[in-house]
Image 1: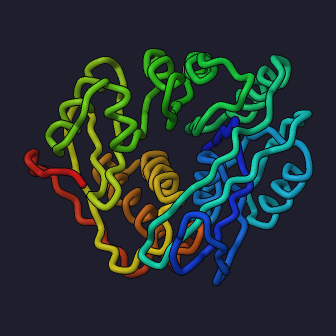
Image 2: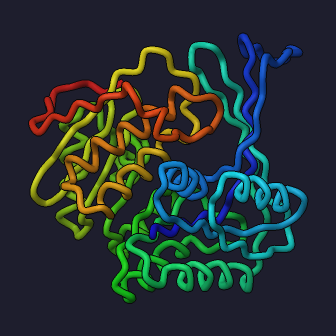
Length: 314
């Protein structure tokens, strides 16, 4: 069982147009809506692959009702925490070459009682779980220490915890020593405070975090694949995708694949291969649709145990 926590979920509307021109009227060629937010996407990807998962999230307003319906339709078990505000709706504008423009709303203002209820619901759901994964931005009203507090309380129960976030909450969460973090390239640079132009720079930054007590650092690198670093190894993996449709949620599907692999006893390198396969499959799908087993067919993740440190990242 893998429990996801999404403090600031969203309804994700993806709109496909021929080309985005500022200030112009556009005719969409297609559109779709999906339940969204990083942790929600992780649970959706896990459920689509038959892995047991529970999504913990706030729910309020008309968008909250829609979220509940969409998760039920997707077969994702959930613990919804009632809140007074409405969930946010995020819009992604997709162009034929894979370019994605995102418009994200801030989310509802949570009261201290609602923040506490969200934390309590996560801890209750975590009973007997193999992993708890906390993902995404924090909604207005949640303290920047929210993820750090969660990490401490989950680890006290002997449960492994992963964090995928950015901004002010992330260094506080890292200081609480989660078992795993999954920043992307830019988020890792933000976390360590300097640019990371090469794969070697990313590896060095990840090794420093491992030396500080993080067991697994997995860095998503977009079209350059992903790098996983532990105390024993640094492994790179990538998969060639010739026709990308949407990058929305691809990193979340990668994280889902990684947690699935680790929770089923795979070695870190093999878990990374699973992660890259799931994330790459997501790029071939419209909007924030998550891959099913059939979508993984034909996608091969190439794993390198001696990655080239001089590779300049795109």
